[in-house]
Image 1 (cartoon, rainbow, N blue to C red):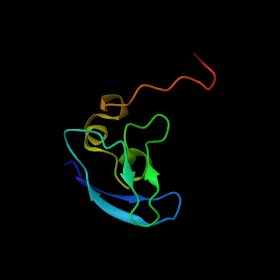
Image 2: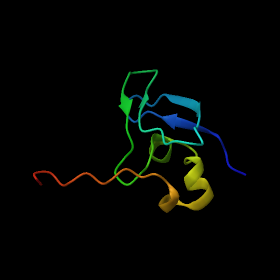
Image 3: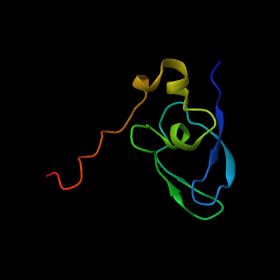
Amino acid sequence: MVALRSTLTCPRCGIRETCEMPVDACMFFHECSGCGELLRPLAGDCCVFCSYGTVPCPPVQEAGAAACCAPDTPPASGAS
């Protein structure tokens, strides 16, 4: 069974927020209710739940990281 709630922990202030995860889209941004920090996925993760949550997003839960809508890896610094 796929979990649809995950608790995000802000890396800046440590506040924890339990959120409902969308099943039809990745959540690329989340604004911390404590400090206002805009959370973004870490390199290699598809969404904020995979980076900061207690439970990864539904597609990753069901079929692993390769099944998720991971954004393209940004070019290395200084690359054109």
